[in-house]
Image (cartoon, rainbow, N blue to C red; front, side, top):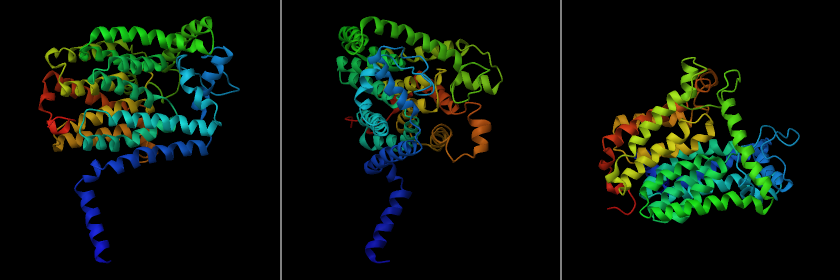
Length: 407
């Protein structure tokens, strides 16, 4: 080994052992896009693009003005659960050959979430860490070819724009997510952070009307009205199906309620026994009025909000956690990295992001992790930790060097 090679090896070894690789921008980019590209390519190779075919037909069925939420077994399996406005956003991809369209659609989702995380008011090195830690979860979400990364992006961009006092743009993203998958409605929490609340309200009304009417461009007034009625009916049916104890599908209901139902064998547990206390606890986190303008408090609350959105909904699946897991990473980079904090985050990383991977044996995955919805457990524990930290104002201890633009 010559001197140059030896020097390179020593630098590489130090780069790994020192942990500097966790802050490397190039590695963040490579892992984020590389892992997702591999997952998408595997789906295309195996022709596993059913979800994309569903999405494509939202546009086609809107043009044909036929029920967007009915079953079409000759075209795809399962049913569409996205709102009518989604037809306009999937339209450009629908004109491409199916596999090319699927690749372009999913990479667009991956790119938008990458961009959104890059805009967070967190120091660059820590944003790199968030992307590196979240890359595997992004790969998992990309392999399902769903829109969860898009929804996560819209919520994050809503938060980012509110911080920049761009309420009109913030409401565009929040309402877009809401009219596609309803999860975006949680973005209205950011109203509390707005310094121009009348603009926030006016923008909410404008974008609500805009997205409600937008599908009429390619269909008709009566069809769109009927589609919204069909949509809410379809969501109701799906909610009942998610918690049906006679439906042997452990890929659904990966939430706190589902976990309790399965672990303690209480199949008919009512959701509101869990969701009502959760709403109360989360609402109490909003009572820190004097800190609404504090970016540290806002980031803590953003993390809590994103996790709440996933772990207390029966619609949560494994790929839905691309909404919650970056929030766990945001929380971690804001902490003092003690042995306890590091151990807890490693637990979250393994049990949430890697729970369906080959790190765990098929026996553990098939007998315990999936049947008992254990992917929800780490995020639930973190949600409790976040609540305690917000109540005790621990966010005030975040070092300014971890934040963007604060020395």
